[in-house]
Amino acid sequence: MNHILSNGLRVDIPDDIEKYLAQETVDWFLAEISRQVEKREEQLYVPGNWTCDECGFVLVSMTMCASTGEMGANNWPHDCANGHGPMRRTTEREARMQAQDTATELFEQVRVLKNAGVFQGEVHKWMLTCFGEDITADRDERNHRFLEEALELVQSTGCTAEEAHQLVDYVFNRPVGDPPQECGGVMVTLAAWCIANKLDLQQCARTELDRIWLDIPKIRAKQAAKPRHSPLPQ
Ligand SMILES: [Zn+2]
Image 1 (cartoon, rainbow, N blue to C red):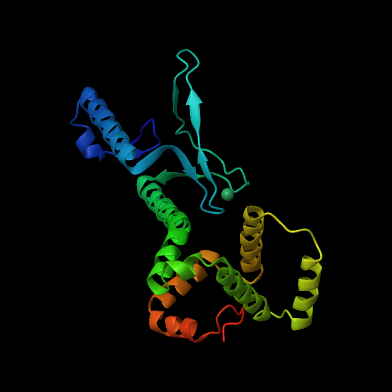
Image 2: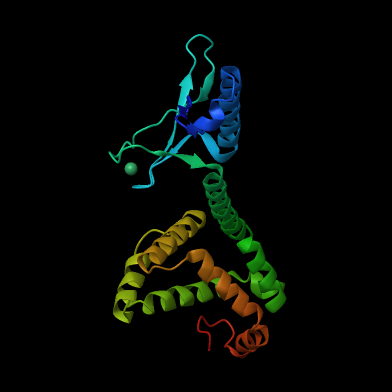
């Protein structure tokens, strides 16, 4: 005979067996199956968590008990908010894999932030190793090398010498700026430049720093050969 349990599960006990069982035995047997299924479902599904396979919509549904005010998971079937019909319960395995993906993403963000924070310190270490304290502290030298790199950057993506000359005249005819604010402006426009050119600022910075650590003898030789007190590198 077919029995339908409170959670909708069908249990078929063959008639030739059921006729030998007392009604209490059958009831106990069915109640025990219900308890076991409920126990397994607890291990299998995330309480109150529903997934739509059609659109990936995930619903977390809680209910409040009116008399006690306690919150609990709502495990009654739900329809997808995007009109795809009944959703299914999210399994613990899916939840674990989602948690794993989120953790991987967060670790990556932490790595990027950590690199961003220590980058200046790492460049400082490289400068001292490659050039020593005097050149590292030489502000004119730093101005010239920075300007050279900035010009090479814009040249590599289509800025002409004519345009650069126009901007030199424009800037030097205006009031002198405040170094911390101008530094911020450089960082913001560089990040914006990366967006327009589909490049990752942190990744480019890291790649270049890795490269120059391996190229110290050549960089030192170039520095030694360049004319003193001239902005030009050679
Ligand atoms: Zn849907």
